[in-house]
Amino acid sequence: MFALSTRSLSTRIISNAAATTSLKLTQRKFSVGHTLYKSDFTSSVKEVSNLIKRKFADNEIARVASPAPFWEAKAVVDGDVKTLSLRDFASKYLVMIFYPLDFTFVCPTELIAFSDRVQEFRDINTEVVGISCDSPHAHIAWDKIPRNQGGLGGIKIPLIADLKKEITKRYGCLYEETGFPFRGTYIIDDKGKLRVAHINDTEIGRSVDETLRLVKAIQFTNEHGEVCPANWKSGDRTIIPDPKKAKEYFAQIK
Image 1: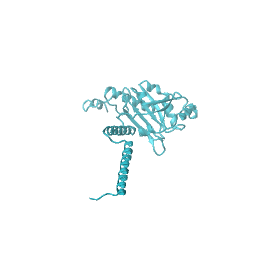
Image 2: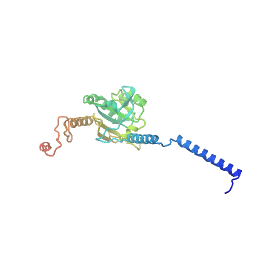
Image 3: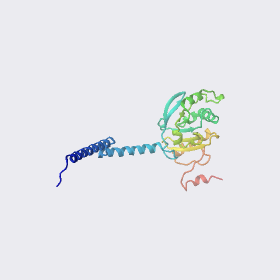
Image 4: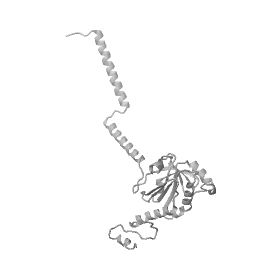
């Protein structure tokens, strides 16, 4: 047996006290960082799961025959700035017209063409919106310029301001080299499903007649379950998608 000196004993006491203090500090620091007790662990798992779900939702990309990605943004509607979202068009067909920039050349001809015939779309339960990466202020300024000076002169369709390019990217319509949209035409049906995704290069304007034809074709197939052949227009014959019944259509082709 050996005896501890007073110095040795006091050194050990101080050492033990320091270790205890260190342990307490470590535990306290760990508790501030959310010690993973069972309840905290369950909560953390839920938070991570929700974060992953939100991340996937944020990165959702438009796909034909799938639900159209949600969007919400500022828009110019009849000269006023409002917030619009995809929810505002529930139970309606929606034509989304992406265009490169305000104060350009082909863009006003397209927007005016759709605006002048918007009632034809509304008569078949369809709305039309224009979308670019310009601000609402730019939309308003452009709309106030007379048509014979390259402006819109009082447009009748909403103009979405996609400043952050989130909608443009989500719908796969961003012209990466320039930072503005292609001429994208997207048609969403009354169930919220994307049915048409068509992209033109920036130099090529679109046809209002063709867009109307596509909406009517979608509506016909939704209602009757038959399919529309090439160049189909309202009143033309359609095809029953069945190997035997389809022969009725093909039999009349010369």
